[in-house]
Every structure is written in C-alpha cells, then in structure tokens.
Amino acid sequence: MELDRSIMRETTRDFQTYYSPRLSGEVRMDTNTNVLGSNPAAERYLKESRWDLNGYPDTYSRGLREALADLYGLEPENLIAGNGSDEMLDVIFKTFTGWGDDCVVPVPSYTLYDYFVKCNGGKSVQIDLTEDFQLDVDSMVRHKGAKVTIVPSPNNPTGNCFRQKDLEDLIARFEGIVVVDEAYAEYSGDGMIGKVEEFDNLVVTRTFSKAYAMAALRVGYMAANRKLSDMMTCVKIPYSLNAISEGAAIAAVKDQDFVRRSVEMVRTERPKLEAGLRRLGFEPFPSDSNFILARSPIDHEALVGGLKERGVLIRDFGSKRRTENCVRPTVGTAELNALMLEKMEEVIGSCR
Ligand SMILES: Cc1ncc(COP(=O)(O)O)c(C=O)c1O
Image (tube, rainbow, N blue to C red; front, side):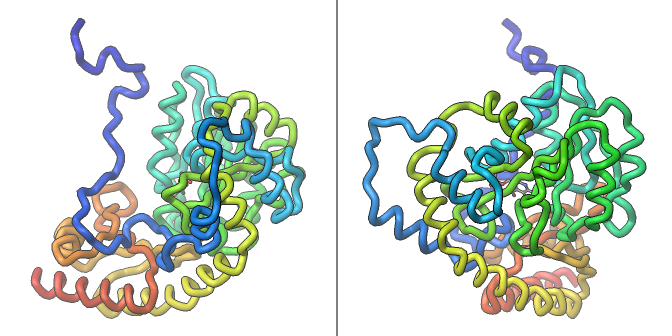
C-alpha cells in the first residue's frame, strides 16, 4: 500500500501537528494558564484522596455536573463534562454536522475550530471579524444551510469580548447551532452560560484549564438546553472524564475564592502590562482576558525567538492573516510581567 496522505480522510490531509514547543525550563507566558500556579483545592484533593483504580469513573460525571449546576443556577441535565473543552467542541461537531456540511468560523479566532470542523467531515466557512475584532453578524447569517457556528468570547487570540447584542442577534438569526466558547469568561464576567434554557440553539463551553489552573488534569464542560444536551450526551464517549480529574474539579468548583483572586490579579496587572508594552513600542489591542494581543515593534519571529533564548515563551501569531506581526503574551504577576518586559527590551535593543 502507498503510505501517503491520500489514505487519510480527505478533510484532514492538510493537517499539521499542534503547537508543541521543546521546553528547557522557560517561563510559560504562551498558554494563558493561571500564573498563580496549580489550583490549591484540587492539589489538596489529590494529596488526600485514594481511588479504586480498578473501577470505571462515573459514566457521565454526575458529581461534577451537580456542582456546576449549583454554581450557575442550572440543572445537571443541562451540563456535560469531559476531557477538556476541546473534547466538548469535538462532541458538538460530531453531533450536529454531517459529511460536507458548512460551519461558520470567525477569523481570527481559536485555531482548533477549523480542525474540529474538518475532523468531523465538515467544511469551515471563514468569515472575517470587523476591523475592531467584533462579529460581522450579517455575513455570518448570510451563509444559508450552515449547521454550526462557533464564537469565543473573550476571543482567542484577540482578547476582547464580543458585544452582547451581537451575540444575541447571532443566536436569533443563525439557522443552526451557535456555540459560545467561554474558555476565558471568568476574566470578563457573566457570559452566556446561565442563559442556555432561554435559547433553542445555544451551546456554551467552558474549561478548568485557565482561571481554575488545572490544565494538566484536562477537564472541560458545556451547557445547553436539555434537548440539545441529551443529544450530545448520547454522542460523547462514555467515561471520557477520569475519576481523579472529576474529583479534583469538584473540589475546585467549591473553592471560588481562588478563582476570584486569580481574576482580580489579572484585572490589576493587565493595564500595567499593556502600558509597559506600549512603552516598548508595541501596539496592544484591548483585552477582557488574561492575555494581550500586541503588534510587535520588531519582526515577530526575532522577538519570540530572542525571548525563548532568554527563557520566556510567548505565542507568535505574526504569520497569520489579520494578526500580522502580532504576538500574544499571557498576563503574569507583577514580577513575571517585569521580567518579560525586561527581556523584551533586551531583544528589541539587540535588533536595532
Ligand atoms: C478559546 C479556547 N477554547 C478552548 C480551549 C481549549 O481548552 P481545554 O484545555 O479545556 O481543552 C482553549 C485553549 O487554549 C482556548 O483558547
């Protein structure tokens, strides 16, 4: 047999592996995780608990769904939990798209949307955000027959929230399922998760990987009205959330103080980091999240490469359309931001 890519599913043949830098002790300001370190309640749970490793986890993570239902004023039947919000996105496309179906994806947004659409046999129809990185609702709804659209709010990599009235307009006028990906919503405020019963076609995804500081444990969840939730529960792989991660996530939900502290820290440090970036000649875009997209004053590859050599990783978006020469640092503590700005100044100085 000829082992070339023609044996792959047609829609996946142009795939590349995901961002996976070789690490040698760098400070990671490239993944938007919580710079305060591991979630303390989850750590405590892991230290103090024992598990029956011979038993399967709860098939549909009832304990975690009950804790989340309490948090958001929903019913456990509105919620699905799994292996990161990436699994939730996969389940959404698996459930609602058929072979060759169109799905509307805004540009720029989370790079993996295109991957999940194509993995599930769909076609992604890319619609540009407006100049100020807001939704172009008219263009998104003009695409008749599209089965799903997905919008992250706050948006990754641009950092801003979409206007509430545009989100509601999109939900009202789009004929298929509208997914609002709220991976960073703890940083921006309420979001749409508590409102899923008000809409026929809304699914909201969230994660424990960012403000909850548990990316290593891979826990994500989504909420929708009960009919949609039932459909997606039947499609999701049973047991995809392991018992250890589920227990840690329940402990973390019950310690909202840590999340509040983390969000507060970002709200205090973000304007200072933004001002520091401006002083160095960057053009930062407004952010409602724990990262800032900024146009670099020197070549983006030279900046990101020079920082890596000095022990700091930030994410490079400079080769992509609409974010030309832009980079995306995570907002750190005051100390981390000072360190990052100092190294940036060195790299910029060495390039001039
Ligand atoms: C917008 C957005 N959605 C989803 C995810 C995936 O998160 P998880 O770790 O829960 O799979 C990320 C991770 O960076 C993200 O930025």
